[in-house]
Structure formats: C-alpha cells, structure tokens
Image (cartoon, rainbow, N blue to C red):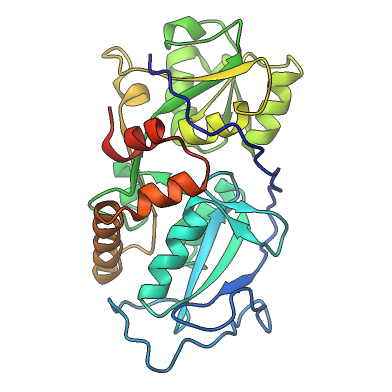
Length: 301
C-alpha cells in the first residue's frame, strides 16, 4: 500500500459540480482573460495578430479551444458557473492553448456530461485529467504519452483504512458513474456493493453520513476529499496481480477530437516539454500537491 501525504494541509475551496454549460474565455497569447462570450456559440477575446502558433490543428471554432471540463478539484475547479477556473488542468490547458494562439472556452460539467459533449462533437477536448484506455481511444483522440500518472485511491474513515481490494469485501463503495473504476469494481466486489454518484462530493457526503463505507476514485481526487476532513484518510492501492486492471499505474491525458492526428501530436509535444521543463511539477506544487506525491504523479511507482 502506498501511503503519501499528497496535498499540503491548506483549505481547498469547495467547488460547484454542475451539469449546466457555463462559459468563460481565457485568451491565448494576449488579451483579457475572463472575457465573457457574446453568446453561447461565439467567443470574444482577440488573439494577438502577431501570435504564431507552435502547432496548427483544426478546432470547432477558429481560434477557440472548446473544453468540456469535469468539475472536480484539484484537477479542474470552477468556483461558480462562470468561473474563475482554477486547478491543475485549468492552468495546463490554458498554457497549451496560449502556445497555439487559441482562446479557451471552458464548460464545467459532470464527467458523464463532458464525455457526451465531446462524443457529440460539441467540444474539442475533455479536461480534468482522465484515464487513458483502449476503449476510450476508439471514441476519442488520445495522446501517445501522458501528462501524469495516477492510481486507484480508496477514501474511508481512518478506523476502516481499506488498503487492498480484498479488504473491501462486503463493504459498500461509492464510485463516480461512468468512471474507469465503476465496472471493474462491480466485477471485483459485486454490483450490489457499488453505489454510483454524479460527483465525488456527493459520494463523500454519503461516506460521512455512514451510508457507504468507502469512496473509490483516482487518487488525486480522493486525497482532495479527505485532506481537510478529520477522521478520514485515502490510501493508494498497490499493484495486485489478482486485480491488475484496478490496481495498475494509470496514464492520464486529455481526451480530444478523434481522428485529428495533428491535434494529438500537439498535445503529445506539450506533455513532453511540460514534464521536462518543470511546468507540470510547478503546477502540481501551485495546487498544493506535495513534493513526494508530485514525484509519484510524474514518475510513477
């Protein structure tokens, strides 16, 4: 079992999970960040005329990167329906857009709604640091590389302290609906023992109320829940040969429009440089991730 102090002990502002599509433009290269769009279909905020993109790839709207973003701190955090937008991906995606002379149009929503939005061609990219899988690769574009690693995190009351899959036998476990872990945990623990939620905050509220025994999620989101809650802890589960899919080290990326190789190449190039030049490490630190945990997220086990 991996025990890490993952987030610095400082308050993390509560975020609002919403299925409504809120709009805010963050301008690349230059211009005023936070300029509101004229309508739900048009973005304002001018990219500098002399801005030269590092990469060129088609987007739904010329000069705009539409991002359906899963509202879940610390990866992406919308304080209200119209921002401000904070968190790891809010920073990284904005920097990626800037170097490609694009405005960012963030649309915070639940994970299920964001996936549908991208699948239906209403967004260019799915923000919120998501697990790369072969199944998702058939529907969405996926980078060859990764921006960070992650692994399964189990949050529970400290006296329970689930540290293996077997230790959760008979427990009622909350998971995000449609998440990578939902079906695999049903297979491992029995469908009757899994409760699905639209947001991790709702799951954690049920955990605190005693209606479920644990919450299973990507560890970064799990630590965000338990960090400031006295009497609760999160464990990263070690790799288990009996449950390889559940306990493997996971590559995290940004799902994006399928079949646009130049878009994928631009994301891969950004991932490589952002890790090599310390950008990812800096952004993790800015969002309260400890040095020990950042090493795990960047370099793995």
